[in-house]
Length: 366
Image: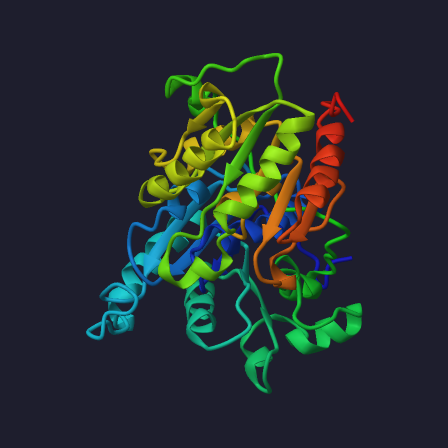
C-alpha cells in the first residue's frame, strides 16, 4: 500500500553524489522496483553533477528503465580544482523550471539522505509542478520539508536487520520505504543498446566458436584505485592454470590509459605458453554503451572492483569479482556471481568452473 491515494504517471527522481559507474548503476535496482510498482509510470532522473560531461551520462541517458535523464552541473570547475565554487541558486532555477515544464511530475523522490541542496531542489520543483514529494528524515526537522518521509538510514538498517556498512544498492531503498517499496532481491539492471551490438566484431575480433570466450577487466588504473588492481603475475598464474584444463579465448577491457597494463598482461600470458591469437585487447572503447556490448559478448566475465564489474552484473553475466582488498560494500550477491580475495590458481579454477557451468559451458577436462 502507498501512503497516499495516488497512482503516479510521471516520477521525477533527484540524485546527487558520485557519478562513478558503480554508484550510478546501483540505483538501477530501485528504478526497476518503481517500475514494478507502477508499470505505466515514466521515470525521469535529475542528477546534480559536480562537473559536465562525465562518461556515465551516456550510459544513464540510454538506460531502459528511464524515460529521460538530465544532469545539472552544480560546481563551476572540475572536482579538486581549488577555484571550484557552487553554482548560485539563481543560475540553477531556469534549468529547474525547464525540468518541471518538460516532465510535469506528479511524484518527486529525493534519494539523498544528507544535506539540504537536493531538499531545496525538490521543494522548488514541487512549487513549479504541484507534485507530491518524498524524502528521508535523516535528521530532526528535515522530514517536515517533504509530503512523505522515510526513516533515517540508521533506522532503516535497524528495521531491516542490515549490518554496517550497508550494501550500496540498498541505500536507494531507504527513501522508497516511505512508499512501502521493498527491494525483495531486486538486482541492478543494464541492457545493451541495439545500435552497438556485436561491437567486438567491429573492432576486428574473430571468435573461435569451439572455445569459451572469457572477459577480463584488470582496471583500477587511476592513482586512487591502484590498491584495488590485481597483481599481473597472480592473474597470469590463475588464467594459465585454467587454460591447462580448458582452452579459451580472452578479451580484455579497460580505459585507453590502461592499454599498457593490458599489453603487459598479454605479454606475460604468451611467455607462459598461451596462444597469442586467442588474446584480444578491446580497451579504449568509444563510450560505455560500446563497453557494455563488449562485456555482454563474453560467456564469463572476470573483473577487479571497477565499473565494468558492475556493468557485467547488471547485464546478468556470470561474473567473478577479483578482490585485491576486502570491501563488503562492493560485492553484489546472486546465483551468477562469485567473488574471492586474491584467489590462488586452484580456487580460481573452482570458481570459474562453476561460472562456466552456469553459462552452460562446462569445463571439459576436469
